Length: 200
Image 1 (spheres, rainbow, N blue to C red):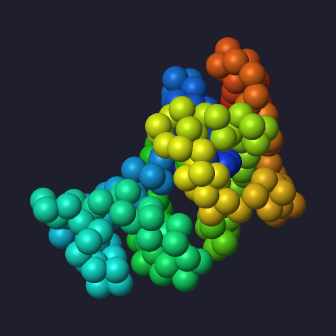
Image 2 (image 1 turned 120 degrees about the horizontal axis):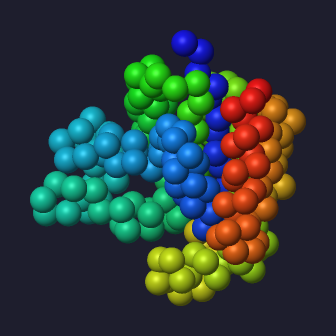
């Protein structure tokens, strides 16, 4: 059976996960790449071994689990660090994602992906881009993660900006979902989009 593979992307704290949860309520299969990332960096995994080789044992807890806060600091410290982490993790994430898609039996799958990584786009049929105002994004990130404004701005700056993100609409058939209002408004937009997608 052919599965329509849809990338769900958007900036941090713009509402990707929220939208993914709504689609899951409609019965859509949802794959979250953040969860795959956790799988491939589990204790004793190849992913965590390569990260330790690159950055030392400071990135793991005493129990061997990945210290995500430390890895985040390393990633944000330089573009070189970010590139190294992506080189280690992205191929493994992609392989695991393909394995999961091959087991699905529904005609539609949504893959929640923090950024539509160069190369990943060739594996999708469509994209959904969640956007929100910069002010809303900053406020949500601070409230969600209980971090200060300086770190929140640094985390947002480490990602591609919205203008760059929207370039995907030129590469794939895409739908843009603005998430600046209430949850019920987002649910209504999701319902309309779901009806469109299942009737393609």
